[in-house]
Structure formats: structure tokens, C-alpha cells
Image (cartoon, rainbow, N blue to C red; front, side, top):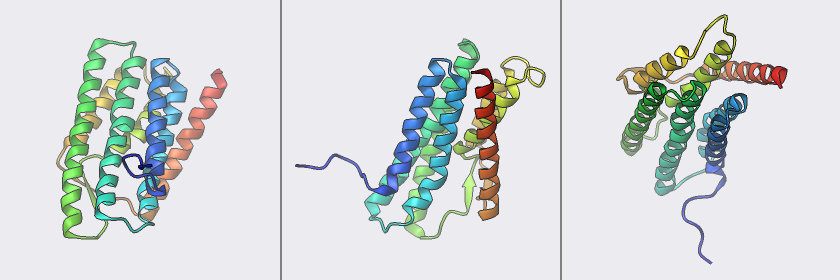
Length: 212
């Protein structure tokens, strides 16, 4: 019996789980279960944060490495490009203008991820060192920014209406394509990001529980 196409070892499990969580987040958004959508987006972000470290524990063939680059970016497109776009379109009341901005945001994520794939494959052919800087704003940043905006916008005393979501997609989309270098966080920086993510996750759970 032939094996299915693709790679199915433990190095890609978190990537697959993250993509599935993001797809569920899209379904939750369509059904207007926004708290659930945000929670599953954040779970996808956690999976993305650690999938590279897990993949690094195994000696991989050149094809496995190339597959890892491709599958990670394809998953990121669903998680941090399509899902936030659908979420903002739905929570804005399905306003066509927001739908257009959401589409452009998704396109920016697509272009950035494709550019990353090309540059990363070329970089790995020249060196085995880990990447030290990002070019442009990483698409995964939306996994922290969208929950923060969602929590702030939930309190109408802070943000009234949905304009804040428009601004979020506009500026993050521009950030995805901006040609600046952003240093990758060291261990202390990653810990801070994790703590921020945990705090947001708990805040979303508590807020959502309070209105259930």
C-alpha cells in the first residue's frame, strides 16, 4: 500500500494542528462566535511559535526542509491572512468596504509569505545558521494584535464602532510588505510574547465566560 502524499512525521504535526484550528476559527467567525474564533486563532499562533523548534529536533532531508517551508507558509496564510480577514469582515457587519480592505490584507499576507519562501530557500542554500532578522512585519503578529484590538473594542468606552479593525488591517497589511528589517526576538523576547499571549488568552476566556 502506497503512503499518502506529503510528510506526516512529528515535525509537521503542530503546523497541521494550527491550520485546523484556524479553519475552525473561520467557521466560528462566519457563525458570529467571535470569542471562540479569537481563542482558536491564538491556539494557531501558539502552534506556529513552536513548530520550528519541534522541526529542528530532527535531521531532515533537503526535500523535508523545503516541504516544511512551504507547508508552514501555506498554513500561515490560512491562519494569519484569511482568518483575520474573514473575522473583520463578519464583525464589521459584512460591510463591503471592510470586505475590500480584508481582501487586500489577505493579499499582502500572501505576497509576503511567498517572498519569504523564496528568500528563505535561497538563504538555506548559503548557510545553516538560523535566521536572525525578519523582513517586514511577520504575519504571525496578527495573532497577538487582533485579540488585543478585539478586547479593547469590546469595551465601547475605549473604541466605538469597527473603525479600529479597519486601521488594524490597513497598518498590519502595510507592515507585511514594508522593506524594513526586524530583529528576531531572543529567549527573553519570546518569553515576553508568550506572557502577553497568555494574558490575552485568559482575558478572552474570562470575558467570553462572563457573557455566556
